[in-house]
Length: 592
Image (cartoon, rainbow, N blue to C red):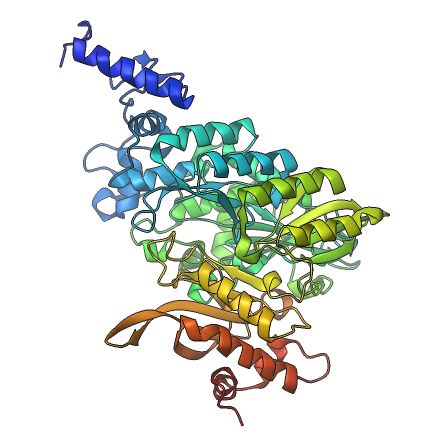
């Protein structure tokens, strides 16, 4: 190596020339990098290091360094928000991250998902679940040019694109920026996509249009570095209190719009109740915090709650690092007091019973044709089987939104897409074109209620091919059974429950089943889950059902439901009316 200030050697010059040529071929522009000595370079630098790292023997968050989890130490050794030079170098060398950098790259929404795929997945933030058609078209181009040719709508109402090579990650990030999108903070220990009821501003029954709240919180997060690098991931949802749910009670914070009548301890009007600590993978719904928040205070309250979690959440045990466990440790009252200490105003205490009862959402109110509050306009919910769209379908949805709507799309936490602002005269056209794409607008279709995590084709934790098996279930239900009521079927590949199997009418948890001296993929079957006003966790009725037997078993179960239900009885009520043994017999075809 040459000494400081020495001219480049011939080998170094050849490397830089080759590197620059590679950048020109790929259209990659690094702009500026920083060397270890702090000097700037026009090439990717070595990084200036993490100047804020604590001294040897010091503490972080009041915890001795040797008691911190591996992930906390990785964040201290090198702040993941400061690794742009490293991302550039990996793209230039077409090199995947290793060791702690696999974790750090997630702060930029870049997930290296080996061994499931020797490639990256990028998770794109869609705050408030609202996309412009031009943004959907940009995502389609990214999927086509640098990904696997498809995109997935997630259970947080955002988009993931897979099969991205290391050499293309900077191209992808820059293309997202060009489209007004970002993946920053979309993974690891950060606030994940901020969700909102997908019919906000459209639903005649809503109490409040929550889009500005979700987008305002996301903008605040973007501009406050202390709200990154939390003890674990953190979910926030805003619910309009209308006809469509955003399953706020499964979030760390769920803001639920409510109406406070006259004669209560606070002035009458529209407020938000705070539901805290939802984590259905650990069998816990969010708990009412005993407060109501006026709309204009919601973002400040959310930021204060996140900061209390950052200050006091467990950084020594990843299994106890979610908000739920902090609430268990210090209690709801102490948590609310700590939040209030960070605010310049007092929180309003009010029992839930002093609010008007919440509206019961429409089952599958996110799929089908519904009149908007705006006269002559409708929103059309499109059933996207397990959220997967080809790049061509993504482009066609963007075209549809422009030609039949107002150039806007809404993504749902049920992995479907809504086209809003469709005039009455365009309804026939949009339904025909949706069908031609291979999608559906019928709420009772098998496609409408299928929700699936990535599965083992793209996630190392999953024990089953959830999306592939979901498509098999769809084919069998379409062939063998005519559904006449909405049914949610959630497939998740591991106990992390990304597809929230505990709140599905039917929940399927991936497992391995002994067969012929080895194992095959299979599922544990749960039934009767629901969220919201009638929330209940699904009950287990069968273990170890091989995946190839699941479609037929579900046909038997749902056929029994259709034959034995009472007038107007939904599947959840039907499941509650029967014990596990009876439901298992229906599933396995042994019922009398």
